[in-house]
Amino acid sequence: MDELKTVKTANFEADLAIAKSYLIDNGIECVISGEYLTIAMGGIDAVRLQVMSENYQRAIELLKKGGFLDSND
Image 1: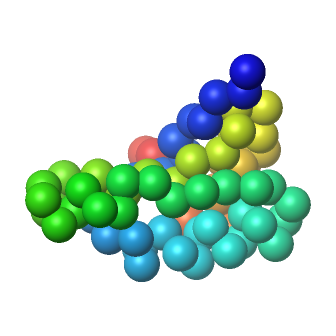
Image 2: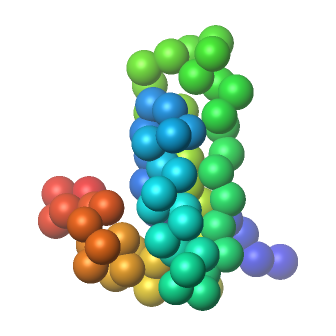
């Protein structure tokens, strides 16, 4: 069974929406999860952009190339 791996976190779903679209445009399926946790637990990077484990490395490379991640992420 494939598992989801987190490639980026944020406080709000909107902060991940463009990165999600970028990955999808580059052929990587992804989901945003935890969007409802920000209501109950705001300010804790509860929202996660996730990809299947086999796409993790490529997703990280694409997000860096697209400027969505830097070397500290």
